[in-house]
Length: 259
Image 1 (cartoon, helix red, strand yellow):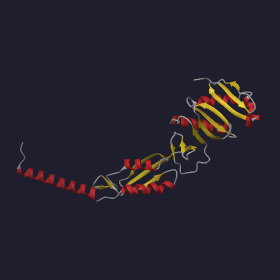
Image 2 (tube, one colour):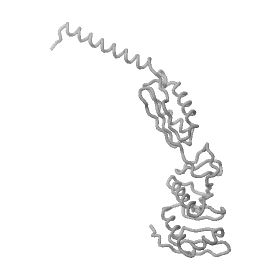
Image 3 (cartoon, one colour):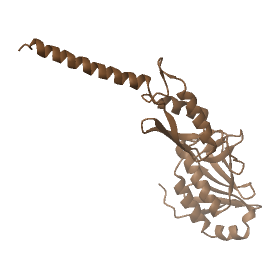
Image 4 (tube, helix red, strand yellow):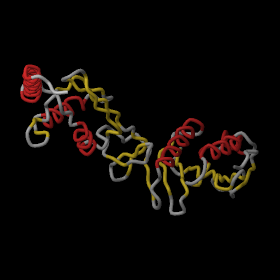
């Protein structure tokens, strides 16, 4: 069915009006705009507030592609900001950038929590990531190693074991992974230590240790000769070896189930 001449003219006129409105809307959207700006930064340490806002403004003042400014409301260079902030500040564990309305943007930042300090001045977090920590880490236990660097799971397990050991016996001052891939937790006079394998379940090692500490004669010896303790060895299942100064190594067995 063919349209009459009058109807064709009306249809063309409607298409022309629609195209004009669309053109004006696009022109306004792309060339007449309100720029993006940071509305809120959530971070544990306030020292990052100004730094991150300054950097984000620098990014937004640049270009997005070849024509439009990065500050244009149609473009949120989230990927670029996230990638560069993580490179600039390795102490950032994660960040989320989201829109706040049409022109605002919120930045949520989670900082790494240092668990150990290293001899090179870096910090080590519970995920086994070494990084430059801006805060004071001098009071943290020293972490040293002569073999394998811990995985994320191993670093978290060591930190958990260390925390419980610090409460039960004495504050841990150093954690060392030796050439045999065993972990030594130094405490007390810094020559005393508990040793466990690097591999395996630290919750089992902890249960074994607690059982041994509550078993005679080790329980009484720790009450009367705590400063003379040299080591407690947890590398042999439910057989726990320990030694006090001027004595021979002794063994005590626990009822901790092996898995």
